[in-house]
Length: 133
Picture 1 (tube, rainbow, N blue to C red):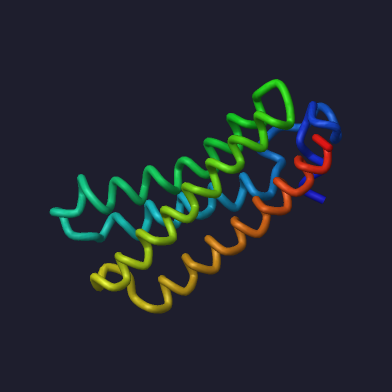
Picture 2 (picture 1 turned 180 degrees about the vertical axis):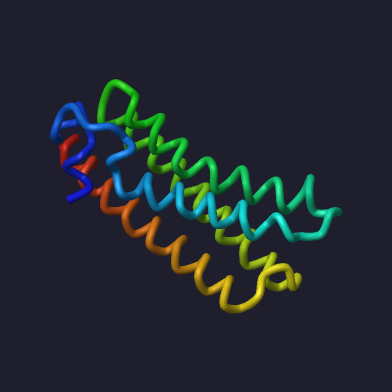
């Protein structure tokens, strides 16, 4: 199970944040968003495109940063930030769909990836909370 892979937090030691499935799915989502946004209108390059890309990059980045911190409380804090970034990205994807930048099948796939990443992240956070108690 993914939660056991976090090192130094009452879980299996010696593993990398790259072994965390939540991090892996966050990376997959970021890659998908970068691919999709390449075709967006040029005028969105420094607004919605940039905002969405930064939000999805923040998800695996915060998981990695939290994993590298000294304890489960800090890891949990960074996972919480990652959750916020995921919600931000979801909102931006909904807006992009409403603006016609994302077709329905692509939107469905991105939303599925967002939900799956959120589910894994919440599971990791639950495990971290129990290790703090």
